Length: 107
Image (cartoon, rainbow, N blue to C red; front, side):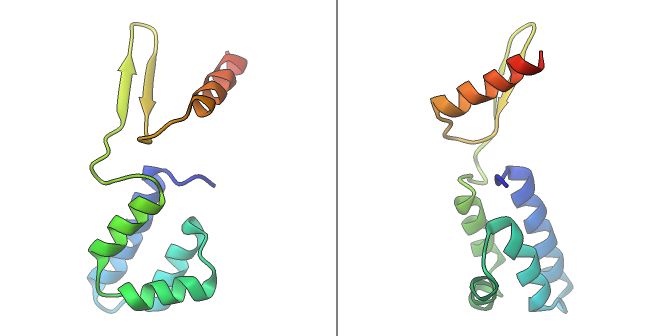
């Protein structure tokens, strides 16, 4: 499953809730971070153990792993008939071609 800004933000919200309560359990953080980022159980445990008190680092790292930055804004191209929102910073010609091919098939 591809990491989108929404998915990263959702994961960070869940982690923030655990950190904010102050009585969250590391196992909950491990479960939250494991699936979206493809960490194995041991890798997720070690990651959370090392960065347990540093949500800012986790935020920056997860955005980087997803190929996003918090500052990256979605780029919007608009005409009278169409609106295209590009969510990732670096899109290849192949990705654009595939996207427009799928759109053409649906129309």
